[in-house]
Amino acid sequence: MSTSVTTHNPVRSDLLESHPVRTRPASRTSRAWAVAGIGSAVAGIGTIVTSSMVDVVYRPEFNGTTDGVTAALTDKAPVMFAFHSITVIGALLMVVFAAGLFRRLRSVLPDGLAPTVAFSGLLGTAVVSVLGSGLDTEFMMGMSQSDVQIPDSSASFYNNWIGTIPWVWVLAGLAGLALFTAYRQGVVPRWIGLVGLVLGGLTVLLGVSPLEYMAGVTGALWLLATSIGFLVGDRQHRAAAAR
Image (cartoon, rainbow, N blue to C red):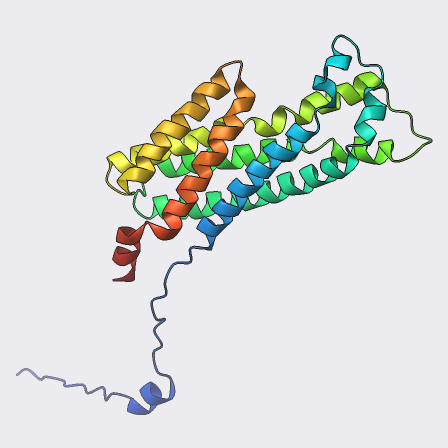
């Protein structure tokens, strides 16, 4: 003789009502990182302009000599202050853009190298920019104090430093090439990929050549065009993310 046991588990409607399950509504992904990229590109252009204005060591009267460079640089102190702040702000904004670009690419290329290469290239460029402005306080403050003697040879080196190092954006060119590979896989707009190929590739070539400082010009232009592209022209990806 067999017996069967029937169990009954009533639903606790009182618990469901008192502790409802909450779902988080889908939210739009912020594009603040693209705005940061625009700011970084504008600051990069500002770095080029302000560092170019500190041109003492390149004047004909100092050809073959450094005598008098320190005294001549004293008049450039306001420009050097502006150069320092603009360069560091641009580097900080570049890190934000790098993080946003990494997230954008990682969402569509979870196993690809492009997100990491793009992020690394931009992060490396930001570090170079900070280092490029790293000697400013040492010289600007020293020049403003009459009891501090700065050798002309050291001041000449400083002028050459800020006239070259902050312009070395070669690693940013890698980010442009990474975007071209992402375009080849159909995950970024075509024109952003082509801009990455042309301006990013040119930035890398200039960085490899003895004209490495010119990479700052093409690199800043690439960053500006790309940031604007992701801000206003990445409609297909935003539409897919909103579904």
